[in-house]
Length: 430
Image 1 (cartoon, rainbow, N blue to C red):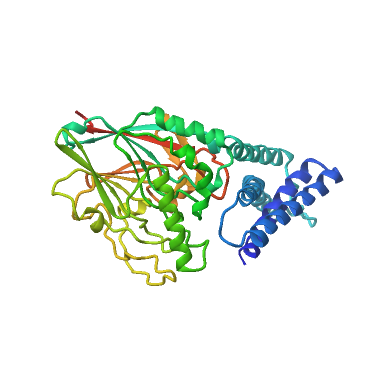
Image 2: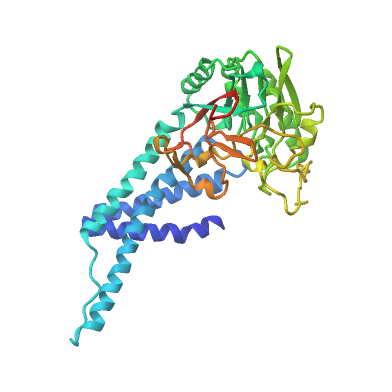
């Protein structure tokens, strides 16, 4: 059904792109080749997505099929925008001349302007090149982003404390061992006090991580490594029974142990220095979407905390920060939603000073201009807090752009991120 719904849109884009091409050339081989290529892309996409990919387990072939389809279709949106605008102008021009002229012979609709078609195809070449770069280079273009966060009530012994955050590994999508080794070395070069991982270790099944265990075991932090689960880690769409889902989670918990991460399932850990301490909290997945498991519990994670303690929380989904549940969804065939009613973080009875999240990937597509502090991605219309640092009610949220990639095996403008957060005592103006 989704494929059928998509067909009219794709055909519309093809028609306009063909119209632009035909304005520039009448070569039959070029024009026939255009439709032959269209048929090949559609056949490959349908074969992989609807005949081969049936079990919900993402594969590299599926990813590259998605890349092929997006690289082929998305640039044509720009062609459509130019030519559709030209069509509107042409219609108005025709109508104007029709009513203005006293001649019995009326003018036909003006033909397409060659310059407009050239401009449309030229502009479309930019996103086309961007997608190619994103698949070939961008997905492993790791960036270290350093961020200082100030707190007046930070224990003095932790002034300058560093936390390296990674998120959304999606190990089942990797296809280059050397690039992953480089990224792990880059993390270790930061020499942070602790490393945290904020969920989505795999796309769907624990076995995806097996080829990468020895590499991730090399991560080092003197105060330990901590992790939480993300929605994909439950494998809820890759298995048919609750028992299979639980078995997959058990395997993934073992993977975390093998790579040296302390997996926090609605739990907390204290890190002490000179008689002072901060708490690292971790909740299971919880957020606004009704399609993902909701198992997070702030009450469980904070039940052993002292009053006025300093708390850093790992919660995979950034919507947990301020989302208010208006209606509890009881439909859950696998009973994954263990904690359905959960307060958001900023309204919680115990103060969470800093929340670390991921989940959005920055949609792996967007524009960021650090010099002008400008960033945009379509994902902002689904997740208003989608990348970087946010502050509300005296509490901070940092959303990591993700380490890996999912579905589309590339990144365009939103690069894979290694975040180094430095906790500072005082105010920003101090």
